[in-house]
Amino acid sequence: MLKGNFQIGVGTWDSFAKMHMKGAPMQIIGIVSTGTLAGMFARKDGPNSLDELKGKTVAAMQVSGTFKMAKTWAKVFGKVDFDKDVRIQNAPNPPATISIVAADRADAAIVWEHALSVGLHKIPGSKVFLNVNEFYRSHTGRDQPYFCIAINRKALGDVPPDTVARAVKVYDDCFKWIMGNPEKFQALGPTVKIKPEVLKTAMDSGRMQYKMRPMSVEKNREDILFAADIMHKAGALPSKVPETYFAT
Image (cartoon, rainbow, N blue to C red):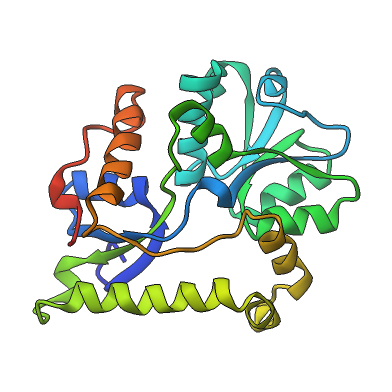
């Protein structure tokens, strides 16, 4: 998407924000999930809290926005510094974080759904001992913005003025269908090599939730600016997020 091969894509808001700050024509049109989707996972005999991660090895995709946000909240709110208190085992993709824990090469993993539920099915007695959104909310009183829909403004080219609004409507309809028809959605899992029972676990837990929150709504923009300010002050973002980042 950064190279202009795609006009629209999904990712964590902070990753797109960094691209925008570096001059890339990236803007977001809406948040589609909160941090409920992400969590810290361990075997039955593994850690049960953020504080218990000290001295442990944690599998994570270090390049992911998920890791960078979790790392920031852990340091700012939990006084756990991943650079000093935790050993990080880098993983190339979400399933690999679970495999590393299953192989006893890490004590815990930081990852998101559907990988969390894959782990729960794969490793008997395993657990999600911290939900990233619940942790963030307990310290801020807010839901943590997470995955978003972004556009490459340059790659998009000349489009009608209502293009963003129409894109928001398409995604809004899509996520309303998913959340309103969980069994039908879960039945589609095998088309992308995901077992329906894994999706059922993810949705029944309340972690896998989707809702379109457009950037045309001030509160939605403000939620990102609030989280971005924390990350900037912690050194996780190079600057504050400018208003030009939002496509309304």
